[in-house]
Length: 318
Image (cartoon, rainbow, N blue to C red; front, side, top):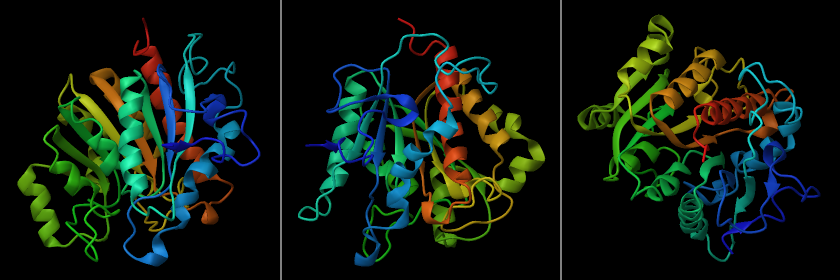
């Protein structure tokens, strides 16, 4: 078994995220697929199960506050979410994790995303910590070149921490080593994190575009979008600590000055118009510290804008 659909929402097995169909197994055909990936690669035994692992469940639990119901008019989109189209949208549950196989969920994450891509689905990943994009991006190896766009407070270029090479401080470093990943844009950087001068040097040596939150606020998202090549295949990874804590307080490392919701929305709609947004993940929510669930709602509204923009751009027209 690759995913565990029956236990992803205890007591609620009938509806998935955003009122989607609850897939009992990975689909052979779908338009959009939600996949929960609660676990990454921990830096210590104590961190194997962390608060971020509760993120997928927390996002599902608040989904009816993200979208009240599918027929309602959404002013972010100019109409209902799916604009009257008959799409197959599935929630595949969470990638299965087993105590007897402590790294198996990493392999299963890659396997699950490969199957979703083969089914023609647009994968949207609910995390989990920021190690999750590593196996997700591996699944795109025959679908490049991928332009990687990141919203984050941190650059995530560590080679290893405590001997772990695929943890939450390393996803962009690992992505840079994948032959199918091309340009990298990192937006919202500020303050300090795990990066040392050597990680910044490594990012610059690769050619990653490091865009601070202050540069973003001063120049505007339209100027940042103009730097991203047109006609690309874009993967968007959103670490919620990249967002301003006024709208995303439930993160392990809140810091003022982050990306606003309007800026993130403009980025998402801009990427959809520029080329093809081929996948997205939202990670690093700590539900136990969420205030009125606003972090989960913010994350959900980013996903809604991504889906709604893709629908209106004709991504799913047959």
